[in-house]
Length: 118
Image (spheres, rainbow, N blue to C red):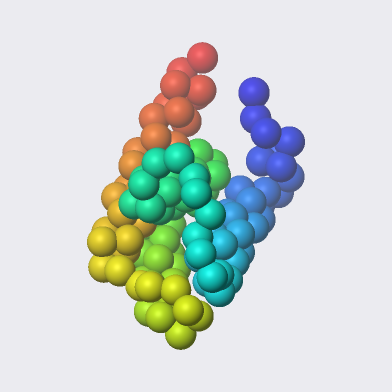
């Protein structure tokens, strides 16, 4: 079963853009103190970027390189901008973004293979 948004022409792209905006907002909004959330900061980066690439990876498995590069650019830009937004940019966060994007692409392709084999 597909998500309704994925049934819309280019819905995967719209969903990915929306997620990118949410990630950018969440990581670039100045805060006095970060809220307490379960897990580590690196895990949050990994999960966010896995989810970011998932729609395109599901619907366009041959575009893995493009969405991975897009995720790297977004993650890198965020880490470069964060120090100017009263946040701290870290290279380790960038690597967590990259690993998350890679895992999201692999997961999306695998889910797509399973769905298409039925």
